[in-house]
Image (cartoon, rainbow, N blue to C red):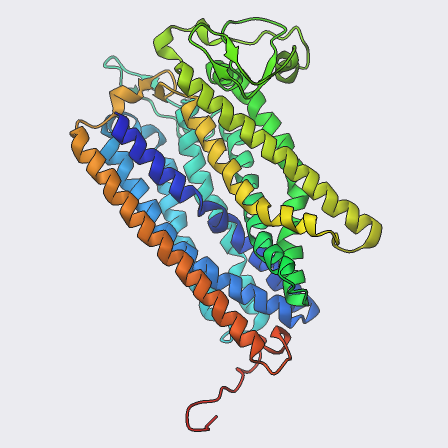
Length: 462
């Protein structure tokens, strides 16, 4: 079981790094594209054109990592797929259909630069964000079902019968989980893209190209950051009601009680005490039910084999606290940005702001990783909550073969991500050389819908 879990964890953690760009970069690109067409802004059009190229490279890498994950569900957890696939497998079908549709639409959008009428090209790209959200819909439907399974009855042999598709898709956790995840993707993509231009700003590139490249994605991220905080509170409350044992693990609650304190970090001990961390009296009960009298279910409310271990609870708790802590810091950064616009109608002038903005992208990716750790580790030992344990679902393949497979996947992923980084850096270098080679005119002189610039060729020709 250990190598199977490690293999799944590694591939999922690697793939999820790409998901924010896959889901949200098309939307941010189209926002920039629309701005360029509506205002006749060649800089905005140039940025949109270049971001679409990054979308294509990212999509190609995502094909590799996503395909590996798809195979792992059947290879590593055959008992789960064999018993429950007919109930929750529709989500994977929706994701697969959305994936192929996204590939077609992305190809059309990339091909359309300089070949289609500007507004026709833009409208052909508009479905891309919706299709990307549809793919996320499928995956989150499957995962939320694993957290709160429903839409079926159990037959005499313990196998699901009488499957009700709508209830299997729209489970109690689906809404909170889907919107929290979707907004996280837009927030993360916005901060990641803006962070690239924040680094350029810190290095002295203060032209309109870098200003616009920073402002549009950062504004998208800053606007939805407070929204994400509200959605995060909503999903935590949903976990409190629908998965009380998982809530107990993430909050290190050992025994069911009222006036339960909140611990910031700290480590759960085998005797139920919490070592280290910061203890805030009664806050956990207040956050869960808006009253210190709110009763919070503890881990010992179920047998020891039905709740996360002490180590797993500590991991889920730390992941949750890191996610909330980074989210709180991002709200402060968004407020800093908003206050500057309200006062001066301009971006902040402090270099510290751009240092923080440059780190915000990596910090956002960290919160996405922590969110999935909280979701998956907090559900242990269940792979299907209260219906099937991880140990019951795991493959019978020898552990040595799984460890070898993990080593191979690590090598392949290292090569794939190295290639991705090399390609993106190569594109950046080529774009910078192209901008600097326009006789001081800057990137404004190259418009994706205008005539191609004449390029000198060897021998003095044009």
